Each structure stands twice: as C-alpha cells, then as structure tokens.
Length: 380
Ligand SMILES: Cc1cc2nc3c(=O)[nH]c(=O)nc-3n(C[C@H](O)[C@H](O)[C@H](O)COP(=O)(O)OP(=O)(O)OC[C@H]3O[C@@H](n4cnc5c(N)ncnc54)[C@H](O)[C@@H]3O)c2cc1C
Image (cartoon, rainbow, N blue to C red; front, top):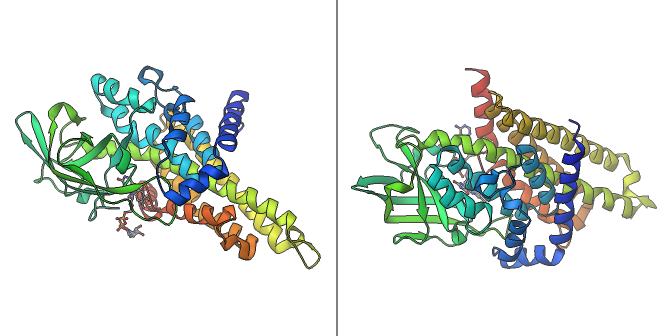
C-alpha cells in the first residue's frame, strides 16, 4: 500500500515524538520501578495522541484506523510499553462507549478519556474465563435503580491507576455462555471496588496490571452501557479494533528488533569481519525485514478495509493479530541470536524487546483464539 504524503508526514510525526520523548532514562525508570509514568502520559495527551481515533466531537482527533495503527507501530518500535499508554484510550477504553454509549455517556466519559484527564480500562477477563470469555461469573443483580455487582476480574491493564472500568457481568444467569452478559461503567472509587496487587510481569513493565475485585458494588442504572443482556457482542467488536492495535504493536516491536540487529551486525566483528558479512546473519535480517513488511501491509490494508465497513473485518483483524504477533516473536528470537551473548544482557535493547514481544500472542485473544475466529469464518 502506498501512503499519501499526509500519511507519511503523520508517520514521521509519531516517529519523531517516540525518538525524542521516549528517552533511555525514562525507559530504564519504567523498567526499574514498574510504575505508571503520569508525565509522559500527559505529554501524549497534550499532543492529542490519546484520542487519535476518537471523533472530534468527543475530544479526539478524528483520525482513521490507519493513523492509529501507525502511531502504535511507531511508538512500539521505541517502547512497547509506552505504545500501550496511547493505545488504551483509543481502543479498549473509548471503544465500547463509542459503539453503544448514549450521547450523555459519551460526553461524560469519552471526552475526558480522549483528553487524558481520566483513564478508563477494559475488564473482561476473569480467573476462570480467559479465552472462554463467555464463562463470566461476575454477577450484576438489579435492585431498583441500581445494579449490585460481585466478582473478580483478572489481568486488567491499567487497573491500579484507572478512574473507570468497563466491566462485563452476567445479568441473566438463565442464559448460557456469552448470552445474558451486560456492560457497566464502574467508577473505581465506588465503595466495594478494590484492586489486587500489581502483577510481576515478564515484560511491558511500567504499565501495571492487576485484578479488580467487586464486592456489593452499587452501580446506578444510568451506567449500564448498551442494551441489557447484550454486552458480549460489543466486547467482540471492541476487540476487533484492539487486535488491530496489538498487531501494529507487534510490527513496531519487530521493526525495533530489526533496526537494532542491523546496527549491531555491522559493528560487531568476529573472524576478522563484521558479522553482517556472514550469510547466516544477513539472511536472518532479510527474513525479518520480509516478514515485517508482510505484516505491516496486512495491518495497514486491514485498517483501511475496516474503516470502509468491509464485512470481512473481524477475520482480517484476527489474521493481522495472529500473523504479526507470531512474526514478532520470531523476529525477537532472531534479534537476540544476532546479538549473541550480549543479546541476553539487559543493557542491550533486544533483551527487553524479546520479553515484550512475548505478550503479543497472548493478550486480546491468544493466537489460538485468532485461529478459531479465522477458521470459524472460513468454515461457516
Ligand atoms: C499483561 C496482560 C494484560 C492483559 N490485559 C487485559 C485487559 O486489559 N483486560 C482484559 O479483560 N484482559 C486482559 N488480559 C487477559 C488476556 O486477554 C488473557 O490472558 C487471554 O485472553 C488468555 O486467557 P487466559 O490467560 O485465561 O488463558 P486460557 O484461556 O486459559 O488459555 C490457556 C491456553 O489454552 C489455549 N486455549 C484455550 N481455549 C482453547 C481452544 N478452544 N482451542 C485451542 N486452544 C485453546 C490458549 O490459546 C492458551 O494457549 C491481559 C493479560 C495479560 C497477561
């Protein structure tokens, strides 16, 4: 796909921001403390990055899915964890509200999220309901003007510092699986809401992930999002967009691995010459570059087709996520290999990329779940 001049400029802008603002000092601090960095989040907000894909009337930039994918890719090329800072609001944060929120809900919640004033997270997964999200046990029982929520959500990105969470809960236990589930906007300060301790993760350190525990939480019925008992289809639609973002993240990580490997292969000498002169090394670089370009083209064309309302979008988003995530893991493996022993040492960028790459084939639907979506569409 040939990018227009405007798209190329936009991509350059994202790249420049990442290269200038995501300093080694900041990235090392994130890794050491594991804590959320409000300052860089707010800087992204001031530049409009948190609302790239959110319509202008709700405080965003009104950009398309391609602009969003390019942003996530360029940010992830320098810092996979910081790409999530800008990804959350645009995708899983505002997504469910934009799909089915009332005008009032959109004004109250999306505008502050797009501006970075509030952080909204997406709480679907439970200890017993991961790939099988239809196994949701969190319950919401109506009592007058309120719903009373009880349950536990797990692995929720951003939960420890979130202002709101979109929580999926069973409202009609007589319906099986994914049926009878509703969505609620939960204020994280409500009595009965608490978070588990932040998880110690292999990678993407610096964007805390924890459980959300709900004990007799009273949510007003005005915070029911979308129609009663029909929350699951919105979750799936939101995840299509989320998967495209994660595919873009995987492309960015792989590109970061390739850039570091090309540089290192030219500098590092063994047997009297740069290791780039050995075909075993240069062919690994060639394979990485080819697969990255294939994934990028799939992501970009899916972004354009999704915005055009292509009926194949769900399948294409799953294909993008599956291919880009698996490709990213192959690229990260090769990058460490090319760096030899130094690739195993934390001072070298590829060690962090290698750990960060691993999550891409797990969250927002594992690779096996993407294969289920794709094969389901082929065999229906
Ligand atoms: C860092 C991190 C951040 C996350 N952020 C969020 C978030 O913000 N919000 C949220 O709601 N969730 C979040 N998650 C949860 C994530 O989406 C789930 O971990 C993921 O969907 C997999 O669920 P599971 O961990 O329960 O694995 P399981 O579903 O138990 O899967 C275990 C293995 O079995 C395979 N498997 C399962 N079913 C099948 C099948 N039918 N056929 C073939 N293979 C199968 C899986 O592919 C996997 O390999 C996050 C997770 C992590 C680690």
